[in-house]
Image (cartoon, rainbow, N blue to C red; front, top):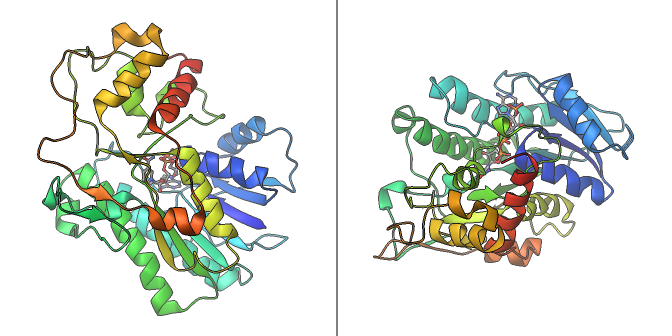
Length: 341
Ligand code: NDP
């Protein structure tokens, strides 16, 4: 299949790219600069231009950002849209988080409808942030699944970058479903909603300073930044990046139509800080002295219980088999170590 993959320089996208190429697909990936394209190219020397090529899209918040990128020869049959800002280092939530997420999503869908009629499948990276209802707290009696939607408002979104990020994912995914309903395009949409993603950093990453947001939790642990405290885990839910990437590709490859126009909550399960610290200590004694001491208070699951999760749709329709936490943590740490952590 000829595939357009957006945001190829990203953590999740780098694994989507690896799987697409391993499955024999022909990929054009968008990046913001030629330099980023060159780095990805260097990390995949065995693939010629027919299998791995690039399109420069500097800013997905520009309304016509994808006008040219969706046109290719041979024409695209599928699009995987992962590009979206995932960091909290912003001063203007609207411009730096909401616009790229929402406009990025709607503009690529419009561009496909207008100029890429051969595209039959579009897979979009959403997030557990689009399902989560923070106002419910730990919500022990609830099981999160694909029917859940984050009720966040624009007003709340503008107050803080964390809320802004959650809203960016919620509003962008909603915009995609609205597009489908209103525009009745020639393609189907699947959305993939992962919680915090761990896993090996991408091959083209040259330094820890550009480490993606979700792996920064593990980085902070092994670099001793949390030595004196056992903080709560960010969010309590996790998944390995290779499983998230496979979910994107499987949703795209599904011929039966079972994945069409569906959301997928792609979650391995719960985790807490103590489990991650224990897994690192067991496997990497060299980091033992940097880690929070096991005797510290905190880092457990909340005493009153916690929401549950239902990932059955991803298992049944996409055939996912989730990696265990320890494997994911070990592979993440190994990759960070190789970068000098
Ligand atoms: P990264 O920061 O590694 O990747 C984000 C990608 O989006 C990068 O390629 C980045 O390009 C690109 N991008 C961001 N803003 C723009 C913009 N304005 N114009 C053009 N490109 C842009 O993060 P992840 O790989 O983790 O995130 C990928 C997707 O997965 C996102 O949609 C994110 O919301 C989602 N997700 C991630 C989770 C996680 O825990 N990692 C959890 C749930 C969802 P550049 O690097 O050049 O800026």
